[in-house]
Amino acid sequence: MVIENMSTVGIQCKKCKELWRVELKSEGGHISVFAAICTCSAILVGNYDTSIDEIKNNDTMRKKYLSNGSFEYLLLSEDELQMLPFLDIE
Image (cartoon, rainbow, N blue to C red; front, side, top):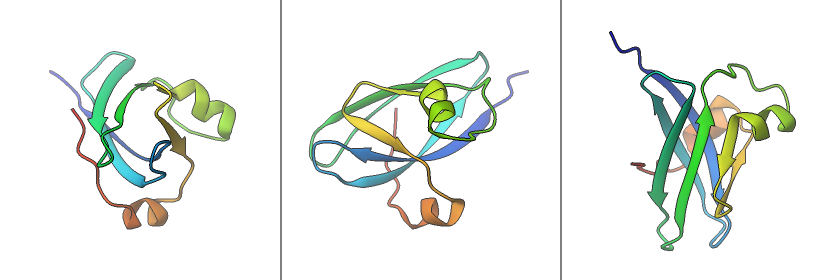
């Protein structure tokens, strides 16, 4: 049986500064990878460690989520996340 976990995070494209909401899915294992293309054509690739459950500060955020350098992860509340446009990922 595959257990799927979902994590919603905010990101900011470094090229155009656009803010996005992405939903990251995990189908087992600790490290999951994703990719997306921003509307400005920047390629956004990252991975995240599903074994780190709770984000307490920016250090924890840096350990859980990694970026190819084209974007940054944002620490946002659930309400703030829901206000961002959704970016479809692969």
